[in-house]
Image 1 (cartoon, rainbow, N blue to C red):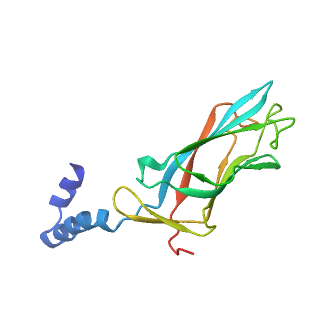
Image 2 (image 1 turned 120 degrees about the vertical axis):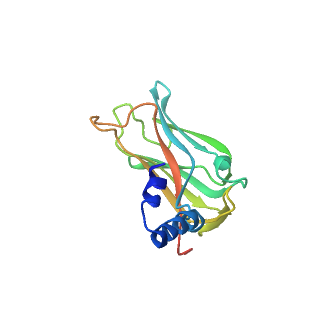
Length: 168
């Protein structure tokens, strides 16, 4: 309502320009980020530290997305999943005898890296019909919350693909 009031207080030519801008802005605006999943630190018990990566882009595209690898990074350790196709949920366990570090004494660095199926930028169609080109490699980093020394159990961050305007 306030937008309409502001437009009506403008002169005729100014209001025509304002209305045209309002009408065409959504048409030229492009989506720059899409959320395709979550990275969650589930916590630590006697079995080790658990990390869940959920990749489910069905809220933004009807196409499954394929990745040549999903790498979980905890402190200075990493573990690869190999090739996957969404939707998928991956569970990684850290600790003695596993490829990943345990967070029993706290973790300050947890991340997940997605590598496209051909290690090149890839394109998919989002539900509004727009073509979305993203980067070959996407890394999502989990940070400790304000006021805490370490990342907390049940802490979660969205996994977001960013638009690659250059397509390179």
